[in-house]
Image 1: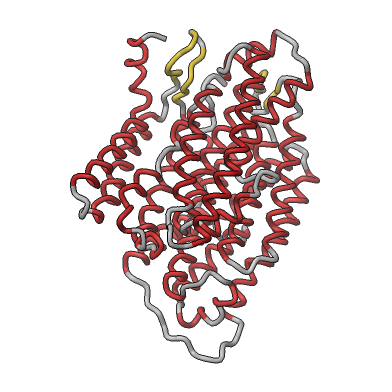
Image 2: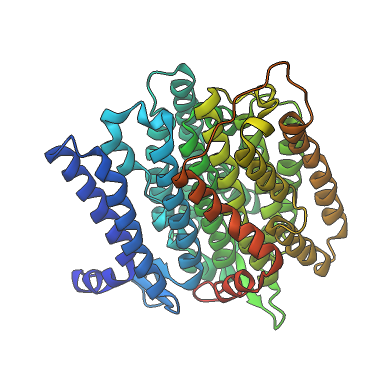
Length: 496
């Protein structure tokens, strides 16, 4: 890989370059004019828009960049990576809007320059096709996440969240790196395409290879909050500022799922039949591993959420459960299953961010995230209460919301793969989730309060953001063809 090839391949990382340039610009503006804090979110939005244009332009591209051999490289520019980059960009746009309205972020006004430089960094994960680049990308994301989790220094729980996050993250990172070193020792390469070639023609000690893969899976499981690698999630989600909690629940999870899917498909696939079913190399029983993680995540997330009194903590366990649902699509080991996961992610983006945004706005008004403090808010905050109910209903998966479509496509993929028992377990978990979401609605509308609370109005800007989040859930719940086509057109990973 010489310098000329590196320069010529820079065209494939234009979105990443745009994001990097935006970060530099934010730092310069903050240093040169410290009083221009209000301009920082708009600079961020401009950088996201430019990166978004480059991502859209890359749709249809299928090239390997920064090649280490004629048929393999460190970076894959394909539709699959572009899909998850769009998810990250959309989440980033909404998080910036959240941050403008967040009382927690406003309390750290003097450090906003650092804040807006840290909420980027997930792009390389979506396109990385080399274990070294995957590891570096995860570390870049993790380091900024550690800082963001403890961004509000004047609250004890924020500092506690950051400390717990970095401890868990450091352990998972070390385990993952050890797994990568074992893979390199066994195959002599860290490139996913080359590893696939090597393991097809050579035999390895099964136990050693299995341990290496499971160690790498620890790193991926940490990023997607899948049980049993979820222990950081409830404490960090509760302690971090609400915009960051929302960001970690969507954008960080999207990057984690992107790299997990690419790792499995590129490294272990043997062939794909005419119906899109994967034939994996007979080395690791991926279906059993992923089904186990999925059922564990769904069950633990939903049942633990039943006992939570803090709404942020309840939604944290909810995100663990949703990670389990999305793992079901991967467990199918087919293009149909991955398409279902990608459709679910589009829906999850809007309904989860919407729920966190409304919780943030209510917390700004009442100064609490406790579910018991939501009693009677249906009358005093009618619009926020209705929209929160709408987002929670979509998270359950009830029609006519898009959450129902997300669940249906996953269940259909499971049924087509004859995974009926797993589908039944997922369905029962959905029923369990209904209980703790309904508990919030009961406090909003059905619990009588002694004193009539004053009606609190919603600003136009915040109302507009809520509409931007709620409208797609309603539209895609009735007319879902666009997101199905988008996912189907983004399913192909370079080389397969």
